Structure formats: C-alpha cells, structure tokens
Image 1 (cartoon, rainbow, N blue to C red):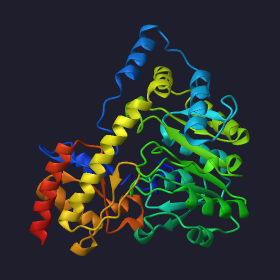
Image 2: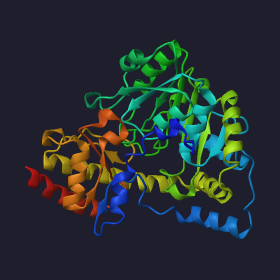
Image 3: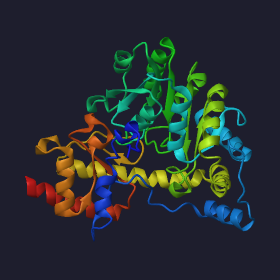
Length: 386
C-alpha cells in the first residue's frame, strides 16, 4: 500500500506545548501554568447575547466574510482604539479564531519559495503555517538584552530578494515583550524601503501594561501593506467561542475570504452575535481583566526577585519568560523534573523556537492563590536542585 500521508505535513513537528499538558490532565493535584487561556468566564452580558441568539433561532449561515454588523463594529473598534481605519465590507473577514486568520493570510499572499521573516520566540503556529503555504520561514532569534524586541538591524540583516512578509508577534507570546511606537517606526522604515508586507498579530493588544498598544497599521504608509490579525479569545475571555478576524487591504482580503469560503464557509453564527455585544459594551470587562493580570504580573516579578531568578519585565500578554540557564539543565529537562517532582507544569522555551533554550514560559492567566501555591512548589524545587 502506498503511503497515504503528505511528506510536508508529516515533517512538521507537533506543538511543543501539548506534551506536558497531556500528562497534567491525568496527574492528580497538578498545577498547570502553561495554557494561554484566561481564567475569567466570558462576561455575562456576552453570554446572554449568545443564549438569546440561540433562543431566537439565529443558527443560519452568515455571509462568508461574517455578519456585516460585526465587521462594522470591528472597524469602529480599530478606529477608536488604534487609529487604523478599514472598510467593513471590503477589508474585514471574520475567522475561526486568530489562528485561521494567520493561515489564510499566508496562503493568500505566498508563492512557492517566498520568504517570511519570523522573530522568535513566538507563537507556535507561524512556522508551520508558512510551510503549509509553501513559503520559506526565516527566523530571527530575539535577545533578552533587547527585551525580546525586534530591532531594525536584526530585520535588515534577515532580508533577501525573496523576502515578502514580516510577522510582527507583539505583544508577544511567549515572552510578554511589546513594541512601542518608536520601535515600530524604525521597523516601518525598513519595511517601506524593501517593499515588504507585515502580518501583525495583535491578539494581545488589549493586554498591554505600559501605555496603549500601537498598531503598525496606524503608522504612515503602513496600512496598505499590513494584515492585522486579532480576535476575542484573550481580551474578552472567549476562547471556546472560536472567533477572530483579519483586517487587510481589499486586494488581499478578497483572496483571504475566498480561501475561508472554501475551507470554513463562515465562523459560528451565535459567536458572531455575542462578539457584537462584546465590542459594544465590553470595555469595562477588558479593564477589569487587564488590571487583574497586571497585579499578577507584578506579583510574579517580585517573586522572581525573591527567588533570585532572572526574568526581564514583560509589559504585554499574560506570560513571563524566566531564564533558568544557571541551573545547568535544558529547558525541557527542567520542565520535566519540575512536573515530576512538584507537579507544576510550565512550557520549555524551545516550544517557541530554538532560541528559547534556557527559558521557560509561565502563564499568569491564573488566580493569585494558584500562582502562590505553584511558586511555593517551584521554590521547593529550586532549593532541592541547589
């Protein structure tokens, strides 16, 4: 019998995040600090709208691009919050989570061999999505000394004649790094000089603790060469609703919608109605959650200082990325022993790229009580290994 599988697919490594949490799910009394999922429930008024939609029988297909009502609210939101203006009819498509937006954007833009620059450590989907779209990933290892920000010098050095797209994963998963306006202005200059496009993943835009998030699409000359990816999972605690969106120039958005049309048809209808409610009346919910995450972030930074554990201060998302190199173990070995001995699960930094070696990703999307218990166990572990 011939091999039924695609070599391209079988050569893609599975997510490095899942390995530990498959074990945790069967381990009594284990604490997981690895899943990037808010511990808040979806706000009641958003859930009520979803329930009401079901009760009214609004369970039909929407247009392929999504409810126009939702696309209009998204475009108003981006103008209001991030000063980037889009046409809700021609430049917005509703996707099944932000991950689908990443996938269809790359498939819509890449020809065989086109290079995509990926700053790492980063979200695990970028590299395989580039490969599945027949592009060539070019990784830039970001450095802790630069607070894991992308510098124009690093970007310039990675550009070749084949470069087409630069992924900007900020605020960053797993490091919590951000790019401020002055950082983005320097990057935008390089992008414009080389006639490149940007895929800006802004799923954590609302979770920024050092001023307001700046979208590169709002900078002069960048709107028409930027595809913005965002969604409702992180800001509104709507992970299971599976709803995201992309904002892009009409020429690109049309092709993204075509792929979405054939692969998905449309995003879940009741999720779309709930998202309209979230955008219209959810600003206070975001602020409550953001303040809670910020409190946890500051608690962990103080805890690292008390433990004499090196960690640069993150100002975005809900992750910290401590350095464990002084213990003489690989990231995976450290994570395995911590799970085995103390029943605390974290993610090895290498799950997010080779340059993550020597680091761990720890999520603070958990209550203060859970974090205190987990770090009590971590302290015991560190005392044990000296």
